[in-house]
Length: 189
Image 1: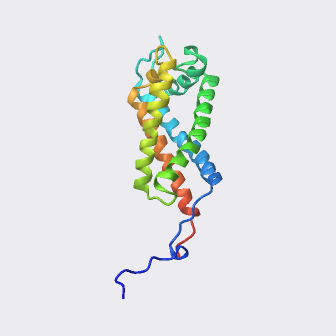
Image 2 (image 1 turned 90 degrees about the vertical axis):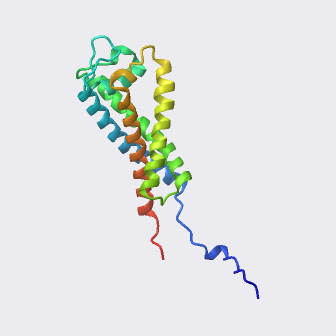
Image 3 (image 1 turned 135 degrees about the vertical axis):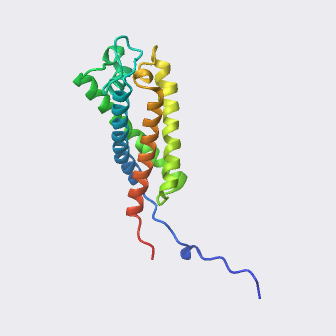
């Protein structure tokens, strides 16, 4: 008589529902747009409350400087404004939302592969925070600051505000996709 129990057969092991790649991307794009909306809200708020000088001569941070500075990455410093300029604001917000959707698909794949589709909130917050900080370091600190002579984007509001916006995006993204996947997962038997 053996003291070791027989290994369970593969059919008797519990399984979790794995979303297909298409569902991971779909969840990521939708969650990315919503998460970027939250980050945009923070950018607008932070710029207004800070009311600090920016690298652009004659422009102080306001509700609009963060999003117009995003436009300024593409069209130059003339697009950065502290007052209400509809086209510059709309382009900046639109660009951020598109970027949020694209980066959301990538982030959802990372969340899925690191913590799985049915992870709890604490794990989602941890991975989301890390993802947000990686985006901040790579996109803002390395790429955008390297292309801009004066760092108009980074100086459009206090630099810590961009870190909070990136953290907000990453955390919201991870929480939204894991929540969606948990809801779609079949109930345990």
